[in-house]
Length: 269
Image (cartoon, rainbow, N blue to C red):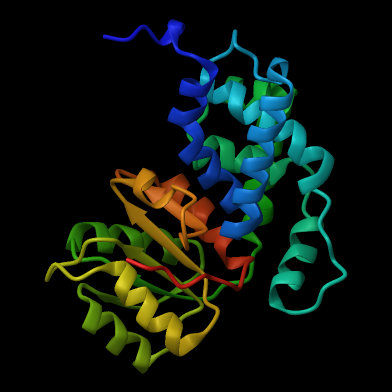
């Protein structure tokens, strides 16, 4: 068995790169923009390996390097453009600095508060305060209609409960691609929560593609047991992705983030 302490920096980065892409996409609300910041992080480490703290856990070291770049460039939202995406960026720019980063690192990427503090260069107490602020600010996000595409009844009921408790309304649950399209035709949602593999061996990705072709821009969150398969950076992939098994905090965080953004690239199965 390979000793993790003897892995090269390239190996350590490679193992954790899909999750950096997930975090960056959730932070920016966009696959292309998120992947660009992830790539910029890799280029910076290649130019100056010292920014990758080889004494820290590899995922912490990689996310720390990303954070250093993000706070000097990515966190400065461009609000000169027009349209829904620009409006979302203006909304995000008004949130307390660092609160979204802390929330995503702790919930989506499941870093302990001590690791979040190391990544953000702050104290554990400050991280706790940022998380409190983040939960409060995200709770104030506008409520909307959410459609669930999930073939496991227990998971579907759990997602319905979590989303409803956040103040959103469920338009319905579909367990197949055709059922999802029919459900959308009856009532357009503001957000879709979708599994990848559905009851009749149809694809949640195909279902979402069919809906996006009709609806245009619509935020989507995918839930999958194999997130790395949709975090390769090759071709269109989701901006919001939750791993199975998920936690309630992960769902709440992802839904809150996605509600701020109004664009979603069509995926190719």
